[in-house]
Structure formats: C-alpha cells, structure tokens
Amino acid sequence: MTLTTEQRTIIEGAIRDIPDFPKPGVVFKDITTILNNAEAFTTLQQHLKERYISYDLDYVAGIDARGFIFGAALARDLGVGFVPIRKKGKLPYTTVSEKYVLEYGVDEVEIHIDAFTAKKSARVLLIDDLIATGGTAVAAASLISKVGAECVESCFILGLTFLDGITKLEEKSPVYSVIEVK
Ligand code: AMP
Image 1 (tube, helix red, strand yellow):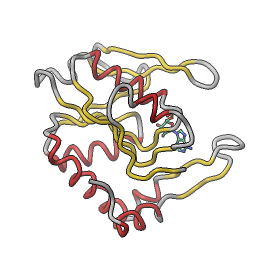
Image 2 (cartoon, helix red, strand yellow):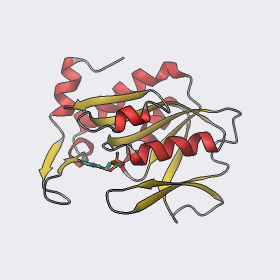
Image 3 (cartoon, protein in one colour):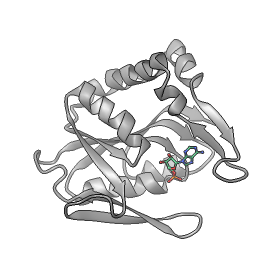
Image 4 (spheres, protein in one colour):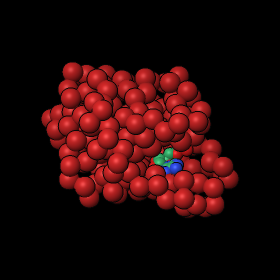
C-alpha cells in the first residue's frame, strides 16, 4: 500500500528543505515540521500502520535518533515491541556492533544482543527518517540478522533516489520509501 494523492500532498508539504546544512551543497530534509504538524504526523503514522498491519511483524527497530520517533509511534500502533539501534557507546547492556564508512572516516551502530530474544526468528521492520548513501541502514540491517532476526522490510519517510543507498540496501531487505526524492 502506497500513499494516496491527498496523503502525499499533506506529508510532502510538511517537509522543510534547509539548503547548505550541515555543510555547503547539502539540502537537509527537516522532518521536525512533520512532527509539529498534527495533521501531517497523524496522516503519516496512519499510512504506516495501514501498510504494515498485514506484515505480521514482531518488532519495529528504529535507527538513532529520528527513526526512534516514527518507529516507536508505529510499534505502539501495531501493538509490537520497539528496539533502538544506537550510535556506538549509548546502549548499556552487551551489544553487537557494525561499522560503516562515512565520507571521512568510519562510524558504528549497535544493538543489544538480546533485543529480539523474546521471539524466535523475529520478523522486524527497520525504520529511519531518510536514506541517503545507505551506510547507516545497511549496517543496521546487518545487525538485525547478526542477532538472529529477520529484517522483512526497511522503511524510510524519505528516500533519496539520486544516490545508490536504496540499491545497496535492497541486497539485504526490501525497501519502502514513503516519499521518493528524485
Ligand atoms: P546515510 O547513511 O548516508 O544513508 O545517511 C542516513 C542518515 O543521515 C539518516 O539517519 C538521516 O537522518 C541522515 N541524513 C543524511 N542525509 C540527510 C539529508 N539530506 N537530510 C536529512 N538527514 C539526512
């Protein structure tokens, strides 16, 4: 299930473009203007619920930090658990980690080793606000399989289709972008 034209107009209209943030040449997609717009936030979360209600999910896993907002709201709507995938050094219990390459240097994401153990072969939806180069999401999807669960789909509010992140991630899981930015 994809967006209706009306839903698309409401959600797309609530995204704010910030040119040259955090550095020259980058157009930052600001989603805080979805969050503080009750109609847009509700429309988005209702769409996600309608899409994923039939996926028989056991968990939603959100990527630090904006993925927590959409992911936790969706998990609650679907009546399933929420799992945070965090930047290195933030999770207090035993973790499994995955490095990924940035433009300059490397970064690392982590998950608790027992995040999905309440359910055998758990079915997990991965969610974040945006996929660009895909480095973060590919590492996050790898973590889900490393701890014994299945990433049944990866969902983004915005997918930047002019970069190759979506193609890279599709090797690990199906990818759904609510709104594609061309
Ligand atoms: P990437 O690993 O390159 O796919 O980057 C994805 C992460 O960086 C996501 O968590 C996004 O929140 C953030 N990000 C990357 N590019 C942008 C952008 N143009 N606007 C807003 N957030 C971005």
